[in-house]
Image (tube, rainbow, N blue to C red):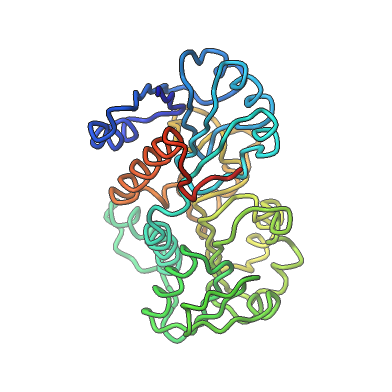
Length: 328
């Protein structure tokens, strides 16, 4: 079976190439272009395509893929809010994903963002490189003895909770389905978590019920001087309301690996572009905000796990077996 990869970067070729010999039944074709209705029409002789979190896997794309003979969409990521599963089912296309690759990778990046904004590491780095060794503007805050609020305590949220506990923090959580493995986490209602947490970290999926869950109303319930971290999905936060909160000095710091406007930016080099009327540019203008480019997953261990699970999914499809990663 031939698999056409969309938005394939050099690290995708490298990580999948390392294990390709273990899957002689599969032929891998890498395309740098992103998946869209215009690019999907060029798929030929591929029963499967491989897409990523930034890909458009909506109904229009799926219809084109169906017409090109595609029967399988392999998502090389955990998130699938960009996939129209109902349309895929109508067109007879199976969708599979990588539900867990390295939750620790994302959780460690979340804590890296939290530590960076809490100790102004981004500002300190620039100052020292310019031979400015003044401590002016670099007063930070301790995490030890403070309260960490984890919204969503699945695998990634659980890993973040354990990290926070290791820092000597009280850990409270909000989840519709409490994690029985986290006996040290105190589960509370969302309003209580917002009002008591010194650090809030988002680790829940993006659904209708969680869309814009961080907004003016919920921000007002937070402590003054709170640190907010989002490594989950940009749509969890209403960006205009977040910016209003930053301007009102509600936050000690904000760390974002994802944000609403990221689709055209993520994984791309736009250093020569002027981001006019851009939400991203507005976020980057604040001295207490750190934005990274959806790199929470980006470790050697995670890439290896993504590659193996994706190709194992393809083999399960070929053999008519269930891999437990099917979405429809």
